Amino acid sequence: MSGTATSTWYNYTWTWQKSGTSVVETLYVNGVLIAPFTGTYTAPGTTVYLGGSNGNTPSIGVYGEMAIYNAALNATQVKDVYDHGISVPEPVTAGLLALGGAFLVARRRRRTA
Image (cartoon, rainbow, N blue to C red; front, side):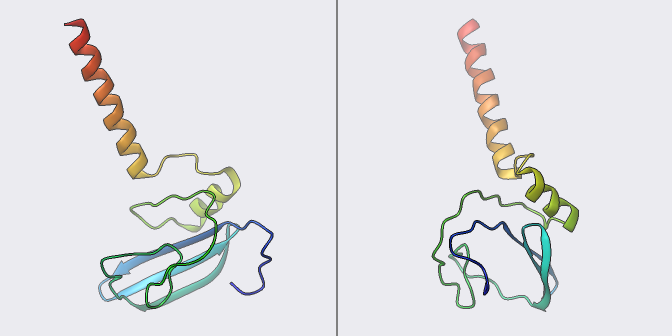
């Protein structure tokens, strides 16, 4: 993004929602909507690079905190994440935590049986 300082941390949130052959994308910087965009959906291919652009090329940068959700966040949710951090685990992490908990319960039951 042009105009951003290289020695300053920014919170970028990008969401997209596919609808038929269209895609609605939104970009937020520090919890503020910067650029909504509606275009034609193009499948990303077999490898997806975070921070990629047209042609799906990798970006150069440091990612301090990252979450991938299975649904597009709305403006209120984006602002909440910016203001308070990721307070609710994204679905993938929640699933892994549940699986780990189930493993511990099963292990404990075997020890007491």
